Image: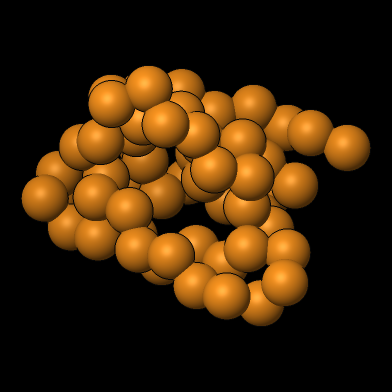
Length: 60
């Protein structure tokens, strides 16, 4: 599980790995205004704009 923090002080707990999120954010082919797909633990999906993510961390 990963918590992703956004510019507007909202955070989401997502079913992803730190490595996966890091790879998406460091990929220069993916533009800043692209919506990245993520999934919540219950299977629901979220699309978060790459440029809005300011921090992320691993949770248990």
